[in-house]
Length: 407
Image (cartoon, rainbow, N blue to C red; front, side, top):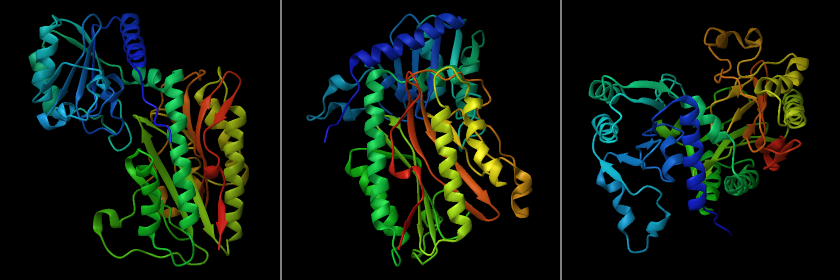
């Protein structure tokens, strides 16, 4: 198996693109906050995730902040290739005071500073990922600086993949395909959910990747509309087992070398209800509509609107996005037709399009096409990851792009 990595040339390309953005926007530096956020934003600058903050001045060398020496002394191991680390200047301590200290050191007490992660929400963190004590220390330490949230600007750069990143993204998607195959092989009457979960995650870990939060979504039975990790991952208890007529749906999140892909793998166990079969066909049609629509020059709204048409024709509704960017940010088609939802869901419906910033699709951008279709208390979700090519879309997955039937 190959294990592609990102070169110093990719480091230089990323830093230059971010500095070009700073020049366009009149910024003196970027404070890129990763900490416990889902997207590990600082890793885009540093090529390593250490629950930290990357500071990239426009005209000087970057600095990486983390909270404890244990996060960086791994660099000193005898079998570690130190040349693979992109940032030499690493500092330990509290993020707020250290951020203010670095910016003062670079003469930016009155600078115009872009911040990633401050105000713009991400899944699981609808109010941003920067802790209040950290930000209070920054603004108190730099009372004359101007801070601008640049999360959307940086996300747009991250979504558009270089040639090197495309190699890594295809590798990540291949790992997801391997995990989907492991699930298909494991789902059968009598199989336990622990065993299915283990088969998927073992396929990811065995290929040198890790699952990105929420690690693995898995629903169970005929009428499970929830969409998160199984309850036993936090509460314990015995596993459920597969019975005839069950539907098992997963969302798989492999991340290799910092680049995440997603696969929506769904397996129905015979006998399959007619409504589930119809939802499977509808989700597949929505996927193909997205594939046919996706090309450079269209807007993101045009993409997800096209994917909703089969659901609209069915008279159905949607729970989760039809499509979103990789990394997450632009999310479309979620919570369509709330009036058709089961009554007990309507009062909770605050869903919609998370990413409201406009986006014109460009060659090299990456997305998860993940249509779902719902009728009443029944749901089907399929799809995988794609790259935008000069003329259309390159499918990075095959197996998860339709519903499978076993048993």
